[in-house]
Length: 525
Image (tube, rainbow, N blue to C red; front, side, top):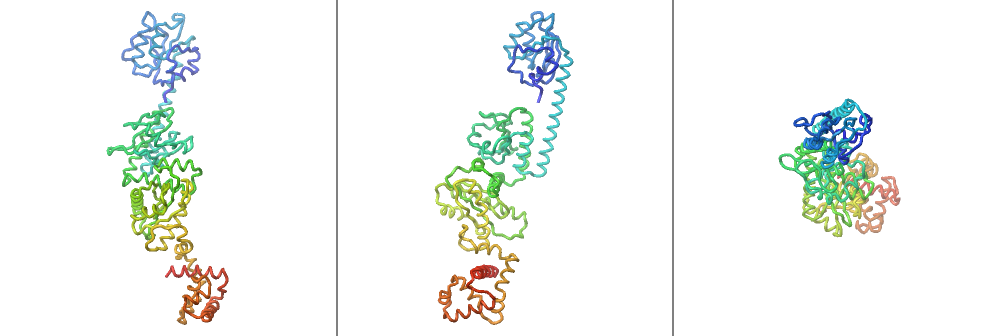
């Protein structure tokens, strides 16, 4: 940033001359590109704009004061400093009037100063600023080049831009949905509050520039195929050249990153997935922030929100790249299904094989909505449903439960069912999920092994009778009726089971352990 007239006037070299601002006080914040000492009236071709002129007043004598000032205005000079002396005790009124008319800063020095000291001080500051600008440009270039080579995603690029600027930066698409953001110096909820409404007041510009009533600095993002997003610094403050450089380099990095994406929806679903992941892990503390971020991504306010997780049944040994591609296709399926069901929702990948959904339900019937939403999905997809909630934060926290339900429901593989709640899976779902675990297998063998061996050696089916006993809730009379046997015969066989296993069937612990072991055994078979 160039040194301003205000800082130059406040410098020790100028203060020695007891400066007095006679005109252009409102323009003292203008940057000074260079300093010239001028003692001739004709400046034709000498100035290129932005220079501060130092003079002992010779060009102001002889009735040419107004013409000299007019020449400075035409040359776009930054200002005029006149050193008063015995030969020029005051600045001519014609020069003051011309400067005030043109709002050209005019400063009178009431004491003698060394112009060399002023020029050295200012030029040193200008050179230092130029060096700092070059260093900043080099750092910016290196930062975004590295991110491009690493194929960094949009949130990383936006965060890097915010770090370089020291200001909040937002990436939005053409529909004014926030794809990524980095808040600096203010809460995210405040930054993103009423984002779409505020953004639409800031007209899109073909190039980097300031727009809207809040004075947003914006930069379009897109190559020859057309603009697809824009970067926004909501409160740019000073140093527009540096901010412009950062935004334009960030825009280039985003475009390069997008060229690696297979479709335009990639950034949107990535942003959705990022928020859903944070909600499911409890990384957002306040409902205001959660609601603001969800709203900025396009989720409308509603009286109720429903969390879902779509789980794909597939081989865990499948190639990771293939699993990633299939997960991306699941996201596309779910997005299309939500559109068909007229259900506003955030949809994004939580992890491989699982896609999170946060639907704005409002007053709609949740079960009817679930039926419409899951009907178009392919047969290899199972949907777990979390708890309906009045807030985004609470609903998002239930995504972890929905993910668990979806995973265990996939293990159960019940035909004809597309969506499941926690009450649908319960212990059967947990056992179905864990039956391949060696520890569960060891537990099952310890509980049922002797009885299985007995049946195998003697051709009996005590395990089948035990299964019926568990299903009858331990009621021997009901067991006798369902097994079509006499009660004495049933009592005798149950006693044999107790003898073989060395347990008491009437013990609650034994009943529970044998029930779980039978679930695991049957699931394994």
